[in-house]
Image 1: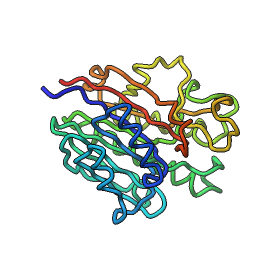
Image 2: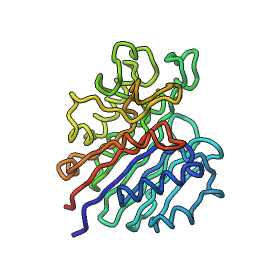
Image 3: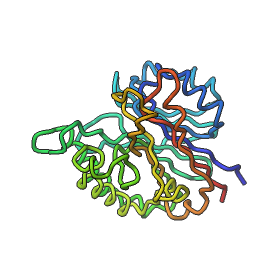
Image 4: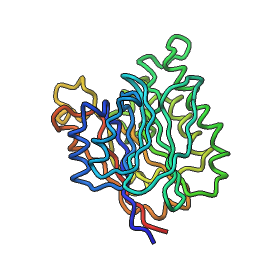
Length: 268
């Protein structure tokens, strides 16, 4: 029997810039697996030695220079499980890996979508919608897999009314528009995914993982959104014993605008 698995997902918003913060997160939470998004580093310059020095002997990554980028850091052996391109664009927004017990982790960075929620005038929003449609089309394939599976990442959508500071004021703001929420719900349904963070933390409770850099005092305003998610298949969901959003990390020096989201999963 393996030990309980502690997994973190975090849009770090530049890995090299925020290595000290990653070190602090690792020291304070002792995760087994960390899934990063928006690493903003091409593969040739990925800080592999520095990451391994934190205890992650097994690392898989895909990067673009200066933007995007995803990585899976693990203290347990992992095998690369491939990646795909989504939304008709070849960029580094997805990576997957298999853990020793056969569990497959899919790490995603869904496009933010720009500022205007109209695909006719905003190519970034159109890209986001295509990306989500591709994830939905992938759903039956992944739902038919016999391996236990986890989908994590910055999905860039806050689906519930309690996932945003003001449902009414954000209905026309990218990340909480009805069309985005509808498409994310379709992704979840097609893949038979369980939102295990909301399984632990009641949906009635306000919960955010992102606070804008534009806020003069992010903590006082507390105008957040829950953009970062951890989903599992139905067989894994009952094994999730804890979930935590590390809100305090938003107040650290030179923070990401996202904070780590963590779950603990019991062994089978």
